[in-house]
Image 1 (cartoon, rainbow, N blue to C red):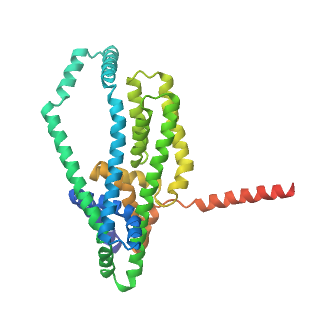
Image 2: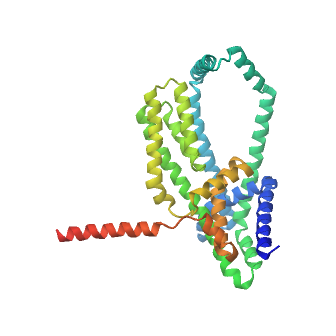
Image 3: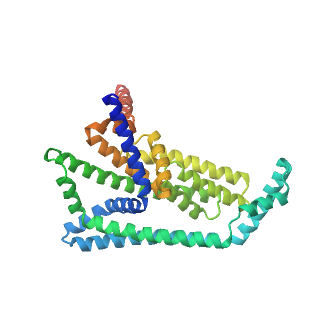
Length: 364
């Protein structure tokens, strides 16, 4: 076996071991990574307070309060709008039953499956109430315990950040310490920029969807605008899911075809503005991952960690790319997952057009 083949096999084995470790250690790693990324978001706030001679322990405590207030505010806004939605729950149930009967009739007419047979199939697939309650309490307990762990990691990573940084510098060779320091700084910066850009994008989507849904006459327009905006944390598919839910609920509520087309048109307009105006201005080139590997990262994240994996996929992939860019043997992989550098040529073309227009104005 040649040296090249041995090297390839070792790299493939290392990749397999890394993904295996991520999968089997997800109960430990997932809260740690979420807490770490949230800590990078509040790091500038903590540093600012410490620069004002506030002790680090007190600064970290204020950061924890700020995070809890943000979570409470988001939950209260969603709860307020959901309470408005649930005031019409009886009417929605009635219309949902009517729609299901229409679907059953359509299946009977086109697939020749009787309504009794359809009911039997649904009953055989329907879980018992005890199973539903058991899954519900299990999910609540899991979410609560994970949230506690995330907050614990968030606090201690903020407090011990200098100690952890010095550890990574100490385990690096003297000649590589400057490179390690740059890698730590860039990784922290990229997490901050991604999360801040995401928050700004969500707020902009709330405004645009809120205006669009209100203009076309969607019931509970603000709730669906908030829902579509929050689902932006899942790139590419989040807005599609939010819009699909809006279309389904509006359809059950008796929305006509014109209204449903208006919702889809609003989604298209918002996506156009988001892709061509907001993302270049707000997010920019901070997360330099091409679209192909963005989708691959999302799929792998979902396979390994589920929904939290989808949320963490982009910032973790961006951090991995930074590591690849600073390690000589991994630079080809950083190049592979990075963006195709066409912006310089586009910029030069745009500048050339501006120069020609200005020259044209001067000649006149």
